Length: 291
Image (cartoon, rainbow, N blue to C red; front, side, top):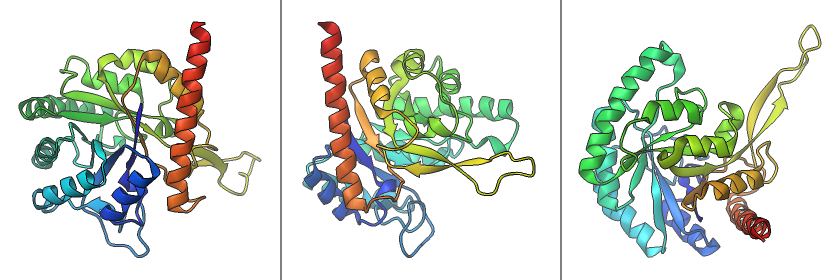
């Protein structure tokens, strides 16, 4: 497997700093966040993120994106786009930018379930993806659907139903370990087997559940999710890697750690060391089982 970082999780760094620091730590790839955002000081993951390229004027930034990535010795694991499936104009721009950069694949976001009747949203999005698949094919790239809580594709089963029958060379699924802690968890190996050739990319982050505060009038306890370090969240990262290995996945694994327990540079360094260790342990166990 090859490891990269999604720059949504590196808000304090400029693109040059993100590429330089990540490369020095040993990461092989980078997944640039591309979206228009609100300003914020200090910078945050979702607003004021310094490692984000604006969608507005993106075409004029492509040479700079390519230069920064290339000079750091990094590769593109993909592009972290935010254009929603029904926004054909901007999906087309993101697909074209991905092709121009040689980045191979780009996320196309799915509608939130709160936006309407699920079945109507699903049917409309299927039509949008059919259109995106044709455009992706003409450009030689792939549009990615992420498993994400509160969207119409929180699980592998939902995503498979959405993409089934489309060309897996040009439409794929991002399996996301952390998001599935919040909504959509299914047995990992079964999910990979269900997705089959549509499993195109993997994101790893982690989540913990914590009590919201005072118990309810009847003594009940409410819980909410919050981002956690890879090592300490609810998700079993080692079991996840074992399932990926059993399925035969050997592609990009992109870290997107939104926890703040550690300072950013220490966080990214520790995540890579941990992922290396987990992958090594997974390979050792696979070898022991074969013996």
